[in-house]
Amino acid sequence: MIDKITEILNNVNNFVFKKENNAASFRLLYLSKKGVITELLNEFKTIPNNEKKLVGAQLNILKQKVEEIYQHQTELEEKTNQSKNKHKDSTLPVYQEGPGSYHPLRIVEDRLLDIFFSLGFDLAEGPEIEDDKHNFSFLNFTKDHPARDMQDTFFIAEHVLRTHTSSVQIREMEKGKLPLRLVMPGRVYRNEAVSARSNCFFHQIEGLYIDKGVSFADLKQTLYYFVQQFFGEGTKVRFRSSYFPFTEPSAEMDIWAGLETEENRRLTKGTGWLEVLGCGMVHPNVLDACNINSLEYKGFAFGMGIDRITMLKYGINDIRDLFLNDKRLLFQFSGV
Ligand code: DAH
Image 1 (cartoon, rainbow, N blue to C red):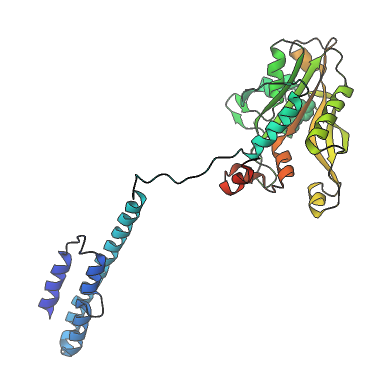
Image 2 (image 1 turned 45 degrees about the vertical axis):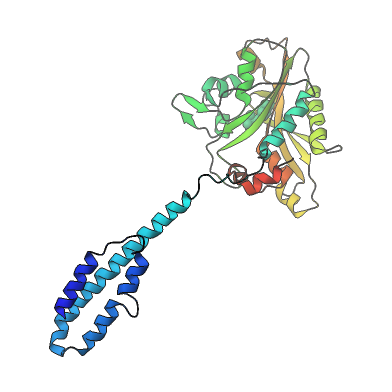
């Protein structure tokens, strides 16, 4: 029986796999109920006990080998099948995806910008990689000013990823052309822990109006008009005094969302008011830094987060959903 086993082991080792001699036929031949191994096991029962130890050991070696080869070949065939399926028929027409759709952030940004365009504001943009001067110091954040901590900053060697679009105000004021009436959209970055409520990048629209005789009343009226247009006629607004280094006085503007629904109570932390933007009269130090005579010219500025407004408008609860590009979300905006 030893000789027989040795011969079979030899055959097994020299088994050539081909299209018709595949893993399945190998299994049939060796490992099935009527296969060679079963046959040998039956024969093993009949041999004298003193031979069993030696023959048994040989038989085990054979069985292990057969199983190993079968396993290996099966995996190989699975892999080739997969890659074959991948390249199945390259002449087939591509899967029809249908037309794309605007991203909800784009829809909201366009709408917001349109409202300010209708008031005579123009568009301006600036770089996302900024220097300290434009992101901080010309905005009246003096060196070591504690307000720099309000915005956790990503540094790249001597530069920063802009923490707000207010940097574009400086770039435009430096150009020396007055009056200025601009909206400045763009992506901003903060070194914050990512969560459902905050991401390490998001989007803002900055507004700036500089001319002779611009007043806080102009600021309020502009923002009041914007709120009625965007959130609907009759939306209640309130201004709370606040602090930003680059505006004086500074304010934050809230809109009344109400306390009727559980959702509203959650979003407004039980107050009914939703914070929408920061604003104020441009600080004379900022004008002076940009070579604008602060005795002659006045200005107002405001900045709002597009992502938060988008989440509010469409009931999106997790800011990260805006950046997954999951088509199940995006396609809900086709045709909007
Ligand atoms: N840059 C501020 C921020 O990101 C927002 C802001 C507040 C912008 C007041 C302004 C402003 O233009 O006047 O937190």
